[in-house]
Image 1 (cartoon, rainbow, N blue to C red):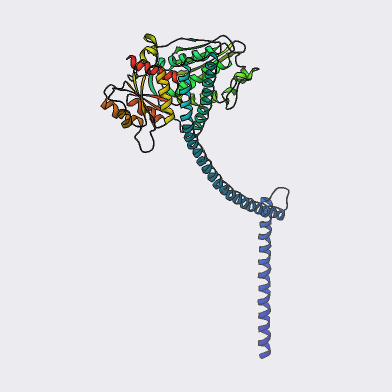
Image 2: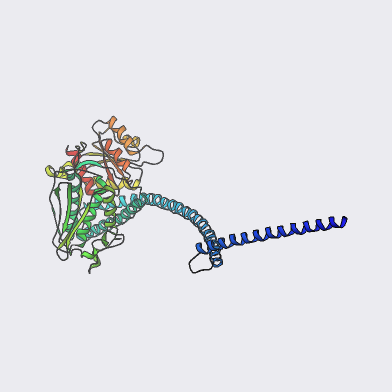
Length: 463
C-alpha cells in the first residue's frame, strides 16, 4: 500500500512537470512570435537600406553630435556675452574720450580765438592807417594769414562739435538780406584781391533757419568759388522755388568732374587741381556743409561742367512768421556810408581780456568812434564821466564770478534807455544765440569779422 501510494505520487509529479514544460514551451513560442513581430516593426521603421542596429548606432551618434554642438553653442554664446561686455566698456570709454576731446577743443578754441580775435582787430585797425605801399602790403598779408588760421581753427572745432552731436540749430525767421548783404560785401573785397568780380543779386525773401550755421554753409561756397576760380566772376544770388528759397553761388572756375562730385563732400577730400597754390585747407569745408545741411534739413545741390564752372546751392524754407524787429546790419550802406554813421558815436566795450579791449579800442577808434572799455560794467561807468553810450559791445563770458554779457547788457539798458547792445562770444551754442535774440540784442561770433561789425554798427546807429 505504501509502495502504491509512492508510485502514484511520483506519477502525479511527472504529470505536473510535463504540464509545466508544455506551458513553458507555449510561452516561449508566444514570446518568439512577439519578438519576431517587434523585429519586423523595427526593420520596417528603420532607415532605408540600413540594418536596424546600424540605424540605432546612427541615431546615437547624431544625438551625441547634437549634444556637442549644443555645448559648443553655449560656449560661443558665453564668449559673445563676454565680448559684448568688453565692447560696451570700450564704447563707453570711446564716448567719454570723445566728449573729453570736444570739451578740450571747445576750451582750447576759446583760448586760441581770444588772442586771434585781438590780432585780427589790431590788423584791421592798422589797415586804416596811412602806410607806405610796402607796409600796407605786409599788413594785408598778415590779415589774410590770420583769416586762414581762423578758418582752420573754426573748421576743426565745428567738425568736432558735429561729431560729438553738441552743435544744435537755433532756427528763427530772418530776412535773407541780413545774411547775404554782409557776405557779398565781405567777399567782394576778397574776390577783388584775386582779380575776380563778385556779382550779387539781392533778395527780399524771408526765410527760417539758423543764421550762423547757414552763413557757415554759404561762406564755404563763396570761399571755394574764390579759391578755385582763376579768372572771371563769382555770382551770389537766390532763386525762389516752390519748396523754399534756393541760395546760389556760381563761378567760372574749372568745374568739378562728375566722378569727384560725391567725394568732395567727404572729409579730407578736395578737387584735384593742377595748380595747388590756392588749395590750402584741410578738405573739410564741404564735409561740414554736408553735415550742417543735413542737421538743418536744407538740401544741397551741385551742378557743374568741367572747364565752364560750378554752381552750389542750398534750399531754405520760407518763414511762416515775420522776423523779430532787429535791424538789418547791411541796410545802412544803402543810405549812409559806415564812416558817416560811426563818426563821433560813443561805444562802450566790456571784455575781461585786455588784448581784446586794446584791439577794439584801436579798431573802433580808427573808424572815428569814441570808445570806453573796461572789464566790468562798474569799472566802465567809473571812467565814462557820465557820458551817455550809443552802443554796448559786451563779451558773453566775463569770467567765472561775473554775470554773463546778456545780464550785464539788460541791466545797463535799464539804466540807459535806448542803449543798443551787441553780445560777442566764441561759444556757438544755440542756447546763447537764442537767449540773445529773445533779449532783443544782436549776437556776433568770435573771431570777430571787422566788416561785419562795422556794417552792424552803421545800421544800428543809422536807426
